[in-house]
Image (cartoon, rainbow, N blue to C red; front, side, top):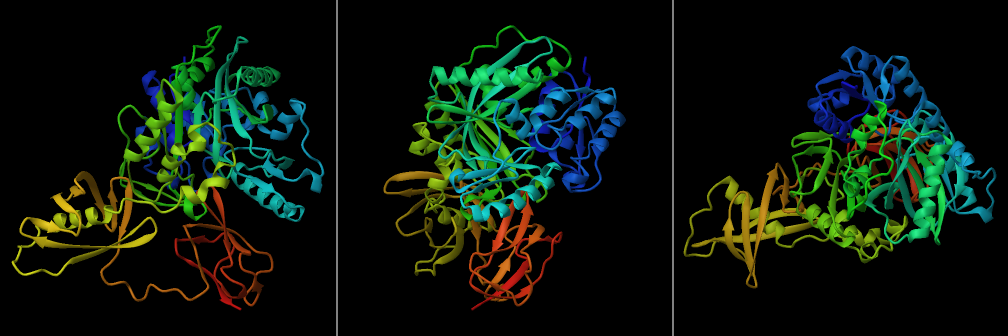
Length: 613
């Protein structure tokens, strides 16, 4: 019997595994980098062990340190979570060599499937050895890992070498393995996967299908189970291929077999030998706890002959601290409050007051809804996200709500190019026009009582806010019955609640303020100072860091005096597991370069200056 589990991971997945362990009477051990000192997963665990350093390569990718931590803390089992070392056969062997129980598949199965090239060969599929014009478009893909890291779509042969170089560098940084391969890129396909679960007694379950087609940068954003509209024959083919993959490597534990579905055909992608991020939707429709089953299998228990029957539909959305309207740039800062309506599942590695830092993935939480039908589940999740309190950095919450309500998604006609087609419309500025007025009234009420009224007209009170990327000016006056605004009746104005009425319709606005940041319902605003700082100016052509991060590359032969073209990539920043290109804003001359590879930068740091031609 397992009595104590160390989770070789961080954040949301560590917290999620700990939740099941507590319910099962199993003690828990966390590991953490210096950047995660005091993170939620360390606070909810029974014990926590420090991994010195902040970089993943020095901490969460150091299997030797994690095994030592497990032994020191008295754990008798290790759960790898997902990402980091979850698909590292060497780490699995190190765990068992130390006399600990590995809550995962055998190392041999990991080795067979962890390399996507070997997995494809096992399934009878060969990657492209040479690429010609006729093969385009193609996908350059990391052989190890997942999460969209080390992937590049190539549509022009001239860009192949650069894509290979970038993918190798990103894969080596993320997974410690720079191997990449090239395969045909299936346009307008759906990303469909099958959850498998196998025990040591020869039983293999397939737990339905999931659709994960809504993706950004090849990383999933919205997932659901079951995958809609496949038809019985295609579903049976997917299940059969999943079982074939699992039995081919004598698989044990939880795993996922992934496919691209196009024109009614299933194209095998890979097998992930770990728990998936999107596992909650499968748990919801089958009424099971996959982590609890992983633990039982690791203890040697047999699965029932047949899996439970599925019921209803579940949809999950990943809430990220990022700005989809600006190249999905990750955002950092204090998460002041996070709450969702009752009946909605929230898996998160943060709680109110935690800081979202620069070192790791920008995912704040997974939010999932379950209902008898797909339409009901989608509606419930969209409404829950819209009502959720997400106070802190800019997030993709509005994008998620709009995506879930988009007719292409509600009618199940989406594919992996969904955001390529619809991102501009899904990120167009749109917010409640009364939100700035509500923010101004709440601010005034919070600072003091409204001033005494006079029979002579008073000067209007003026406040300015940035909302949805645009500046808004608010004007209101004090009157005998309280504050007044043109065309709006102020029913109530308190520090936390403002009630406004227009055209006979009364609306309530819950308001929360954190310095110059204001949240009015689901709308995020930034209060502008009354007198702008005259020193907050940058020279024309200045390239400023859009987020804190690390300079990973500078364009080859880039020096002061170099001529550059508008849009030319000059500097590559890595932040929160994503690589971002900083491009020349105009054609001209690079007059100054202030960074070099390996340098840490803060948001708005001056990187370089391009003087227009």
